[in-house]
Length: 327
Image (cartoon, rainbow, N blue to C red; front, side):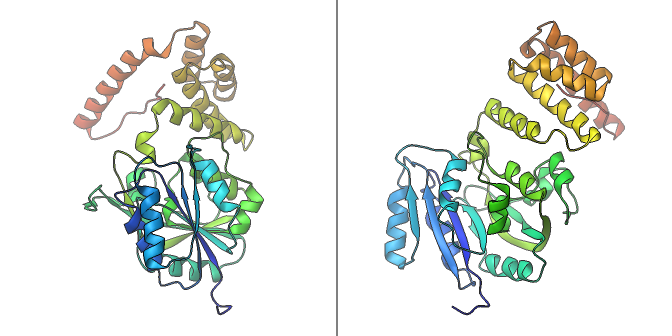
């Protein structure tokens, strides 16, 4: 293989994707980029995914490393196992319910090869589709809500605001994982925490155009996770980044305290106290008072929903959005 084609490790993760897995693997096989190490990791699918993966590899003659679990390990451990076998200069990941366009890898390799080593990640946008492959209006980044012009460079503070990076549309220098460390296996989803950790050390570049199709369906990870588990992971991520700056600490303590209160976590009073010290505003004081009085979130939630509904109706009449802090 010519030196002009650095090796790219592609990690394809599967969990009960029998309807989509062959199409996803085919979208990897037909990539125009000629130097790919493929690792397919199945996390204890209960459908025919494993059978279909093996059948696809045999019939197409595609060389790949196949990792499969007898018991579900979660996406973070699954990706760590795959990364331990990665040999590429770059790593690209895909869930096997998504699809890549044929030039997806080639475009981003050329982009990162032309950029300094301080740029660790190239990320693009993704077109959304439903379970039948029909287009859904609004690409991934637009649908996230906050980001209109995808930023580049130092993205640490932008990523503290929200995770707007489509994991299936990224190419990462493998050295970034050595620097940032493995995925945190205590979390139920992997990407936001990793992007933040990488962003502390490396810059990000945006890839123009759309080279990935992201599938939205009821069995996807984001739909399967219970809201409580999602909030708990968010809180764990926020706690890791306290100490960045006084301004961001105030924002993060607010998020941590609200998540702990919603989840009825034992540390909620401690976090509410830290939030009050960092923010010293009326919402922080109210939240601290509720925690100190041991008023559970389930008692407050109906009032919150009523206030949110009034605010939404007000915004609809006035054409503006009122400022509100949500518990």
